[in-house]
Image (cartoon, rainbow over all chains, first blue to last red; front, top):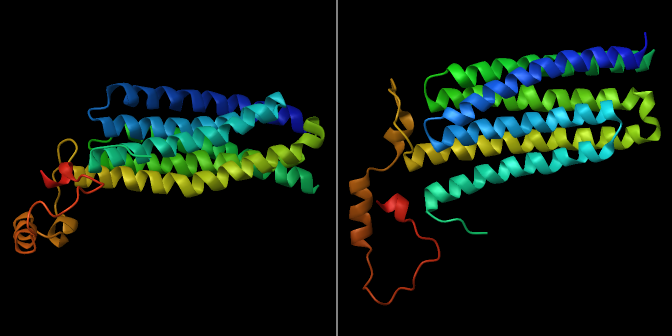
Length: 94
Length: 151
């Protein structure tokens, strides 16, 4: 069993399913009735993109691609907290 | 032998995470109100993001074309996994509480809402504030303004 070829097969299969999920998240992010729905969809989108970037970083043998995933997941968290502060307190303070 | 076992576990975790992700996306698109969509999105963040990241870390440990860099890659993957495990429930909890207390959008039809029964009534709070009100002019301006809540 060759690890590289099996991992390529796994990556192809996973990339197709991930792309389909990204498209479905994008539809909800565009048409969401309220702002909270949009933020929920963008939140899911960025966490999944972080996971997919780590997998792609293994495939392309690049550490730089994988280290961006940390920033991406923290950014999604920041989006949640700022929206909460804006809705509940009416202002965004640092 | 042990390398193949770790590799198979990691690959199965990546594929399972992709399937979880698709299920969560369908749920996010099809559910009717915001709270059920939040339920679907938690499936998507824990099952669809944290699980494949841990699987990718296990794959990276035994993926020999990476050379010596594979330990760095596995370290980054496990860090991102632990970060998502901490961050995703906190973020979705704060978002749902903002929607509930800030009254964003239309409230769905509920059979029972026990949180609303436990909260103090708005008229009681106003009466309490009137009882303990101080003389105007002596108080400093508060740092946080609760104007959205007070409305």
